Length: 325
Ligand SMILES: [Zn+2]
Image 1 (spheres, protein in one colour):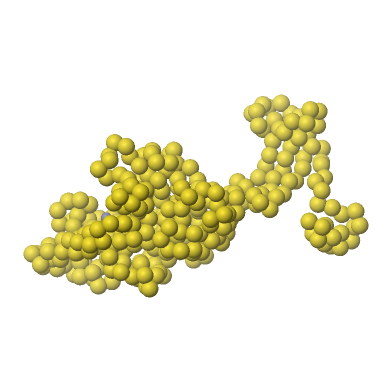
Image 2 (image 1 turned 90 degrees about the vertical axis):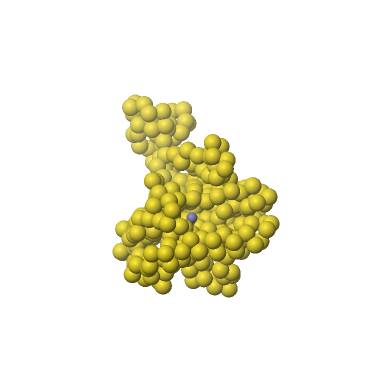
């Protein structure tokens, strides 16, 4: 602070220059109570590094009460470090927001590929509007720097994987998000539906109605850990690709089998492209503690379900093209 004060004195050529807040008398409404009454207030510019924030604060000149504030920092992409469950410490893009950081990225660097990526905390319940932001006071989403890491670490895997999958679709296929029209990528970590305990918490799902991704927490490793591994996330986003291209009916006979098979293929394609050294050609293996042969069986069955209809009815050019991409 002493150094910056000296710089301020030098840059302004004013020996009395200081960062100490200087008030300005203004007339304002009482924003915090919603009253239309006008008040005489002192206006101060208050800045902080942690949390990174800057606001105008209005103080009632007669009684010292805070009557309003105006955020001055617009939301902005910021580079961060994320200590993930499955992929070590990786670089992510987060967003300065209301005095803290959240798992949100705005992509505008390529004009035709403008996509937002937003990872929410669903709070172990099924109503998406009730979800809240994952927030951190700094950009190091790591042990010691992010107090919530012990319960929310899976969110970092999901957010990073959503970024990588989108990188793959943009870079390799020049595709503007899942629908090729900039569909926002929205993920809900800690999703849980108590009325569907067959599916949850041991699952992840593409929601074809809301066009969002739901991630279960798993059951603590009895069967699954949180279902947020890179290939799992890319698999679910692959369902979005299928919906907006072939629109194969999910869960229904041959179309459902093809739908799942293609998502498996996209899952391993993204994993191989982003982290080739980790490629196992198995789906979701890292989220499973026991019974390591299960994912082998799963992927073989799903791929068999892709191949069998083709063998029965003959391949269509579209199917062959997709299989070879
Ligand atoms: Zn699937």
